[in-house]
Length: 214
Length: 426
Image 1: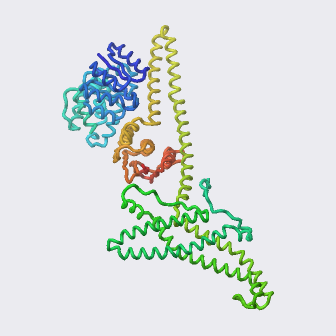
Image 2: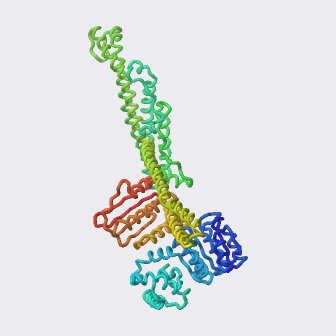
Image 3: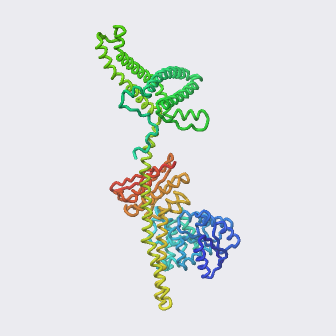
């Protein structure tokens, strides 16, 4: 894949470069600020961009804004945002720009190399990946919802994993159950929450996220 | 601490202990002049104000009355100002002008501000009672003075002709006796005059001045106290951060470096053992990251800086293990100090809810009314929460006091527990 990296810390930028190069991808541009990122995405049209939230000049949510601006210019360009903290509010703002091809993960997740690379590929393929922490916040906020309370504990676990963007196979592995059982849980969840049972995984994630964000 | 704001200008102190010197001191005669002037001015203001006000009120139905009354008001405000100047120049008694600066705008705006100001009416009251005050003082001073002088001079009267000066004095010794009694009467005169003028000054300070000094004194006391508490709270906070870093992440990093060092040694000789060490190190590193992240978030949450109180509260609610509903009605961003204080109160309250209350749900409500942020954290737990002197909420109470807020905790046994915060946002 062709990848753009936006990260102002040299240490981490070099680390990310090494990580993706190691996995056999091309880093076509590595930048250290928001405006440079928008420009690089416009120029390179990468398969996916890895973006740090905090960058100069503001050191606040520069990366998030730049990502949204870049998606304005290059619609649906896949972006994976990394942040020291994940908050449901930022996730919401990012998903507003179209939930397909976005990822929002804690920086710590980079340490688990194979999971991180999988998330990167999923975002590049137009999927949605959310950090379990964000999903936990979304679910906690919605937990007073009666329909959510109707779910069994197991179904709630499955729901959270769907919202993170996990595939059926991954959910089955995580919960040590068969894929058939996962399918059954999913259709139960969708009927209990009165959602249209979407066929493809991407659309299913979007449906669950739309529901969780109320 | 008590005398931070000792009056910078106090009336000139005189030596009360020496009656003879007091009799010839300038203060006595300045005070005497002051009394005469008070009498004249009191009479003047009484006549002028009664005339103008009655005319104004009588003609208020016509168009003349209103401007006449407004003009009268300006006149008495000016009159009160002259009185303040008189106290200052004649007695060195500084009376602060209590009026707030007038707003920009039309005549009507300015008039409205004045009409709402209680000092305007106190000024009027003062000018009215100036007449009785002046009259009484004048009568007492003049009478006392005449009595004293006539007594002291009794022997001379006796000498000139044998008439009496009001008393029936038949012999020279009697006249001398009267004179002897007259001396203390004369010596008492300055005390009477000065005493009356001081009483008048005291009254004037309360009617013409503002209570700003007493307010300021009290305020400085409060601020000093809350400042010292805030300082010690922040020292405690730093100590806590240092300890957390030292006991947690720092130890983990040491251990991580050790494991990696050993793995490096064993890489060739025992690759299997090296693998175990490396994966241990990996776990240690991730734990250290999480610890530092939580610690930094506890110092100041990024979401609060970026998105404000509303977003930060909902992030807190989202991270709480029980469901928390959030209802906010906030007009955009509030001042930093207000936002962060409110945030930490909510954080602490929700931590307590999750840890101790046994609640199954909680709610946070925040709204701004009349420039005051009102915030409630309520849970359906068992109640009976107590605020210990070392507890988190007590430390927060100091922080809240530091921004002039108020924090109350109601927690009857059996619940519900309600943490209520009020913070002025102006």
